[in-house]
Length: 107
Image (cartoon, rainbow, N blue to C red):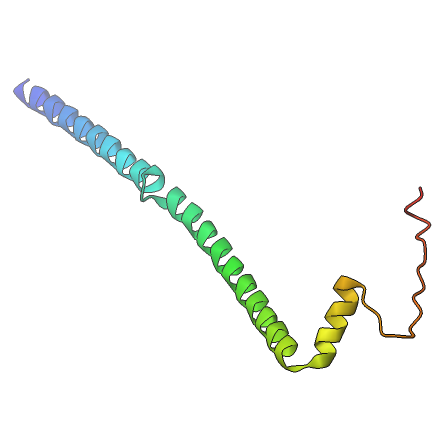
């Protein structure tokens, strides 16, 4: 009889130990996934990092283009003339300007 009781107590301890291990393991896994430094946060931060890196690359390319435009405007009279014609509508003496009405604007 005593052996049955000891066997029952041992089985009960094993079940409690297994349940304790399951609870602790579940907690650790959930913490690993959802905590402030968990996998979900990592994925979110990685996406933000990639977005910022792409934005930096785009801005760097635009800066290089603008630097080229500035250098061109400093040294090339044709660039200055083209910009003045485009933005200010300037023309050379004796040139005729033709303006065409866009038919799609009326609709």
